[in-house]
Length: 438
Image (cartoon, rainbow, N blue to C red; front, side):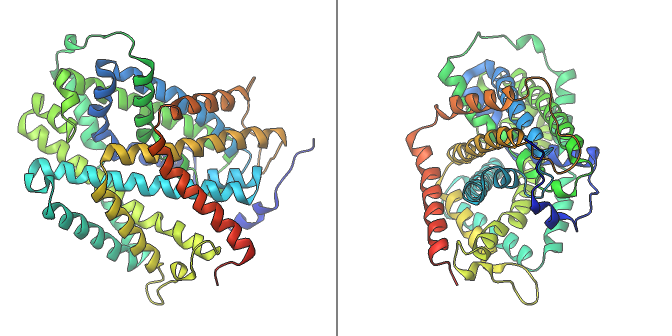
């Protein structure tokens, strides 16, 4: 079958391809290594104990297969949109809509979980925030402030993000470096292989630590030589993130031992306090708060635009697509998003929200694996020679099988949320074709 070059490539022709390997790798690493790692070490230790590093390795191996699928698809579809664009080119508008809805759902659940985790971190300094009216007031005030800033213009929102992003990785690197020299590593004892179901649940939770790759590669229409740059950047960033994650988990386990599983509020701060004293606790709390707040800032800038796009395309009432005449921002979409996040963050735990987000992410990865196979079958090409190797098709197939294994550990309730949202999106799609919102 001859190579196919889809027409949508012309729509991105006006974009400047200025993102190289270093910039894209940094963007993926920045999007991946985020707020979740400040909380997840304790939750994974709850599931599999001292075998937690194995869960990271298994998760990294699965994400590695997904990364190959992303690389295969990204090297063939040089369009802005990431997985959404890959699915649209491969399967058409309906499945692309579901991919877009899954991206929105995972984003909303993730940021709500991070908001909850941020309050948990603050509660270690001010126990009053552990529950009650004070916690709700701080949550409402924080989201109101971020919504107001972003409603007043995109430049204001990006300046806030730039200010907090630079401080995110420093505490984590210092935590690992200091722990490597100050801790007694003989305390780490291999407990044997964990139960398969417990390992699966832990990997399901850990997917949260690796999400971000699919969002960071969305600007593929602005990447230099995407057929080479996207695969290299994805795999390099994954290797760097996994190395850092395992190092963090090992240091936390060496510092806290079995007690790590009980320190679910601020596990890294508690661990740092054991070998760096009060200064270490304060540093990790500050790093966690900074990272989580930065995540909220970035989300408030990006995720409301999905609601705006849905309304623009007739899937939501046109009120959500209104743009402020002076600030030129989708104000109704921003405030609606802030209200949804506040409701979820107030009513659900970090772990519950993380799993809901991960279920959506895994379904999105299934679509990506399918798209990679279909794009290769049709030999779709938009730029240079696509990324491939011997038996390349086995990677998305194996990735899809392992994703299904992880999903099998989720409960019916965790699936119900995602299923309900996708059902509503399907109804909106049918309604739009018959009588779109005006």
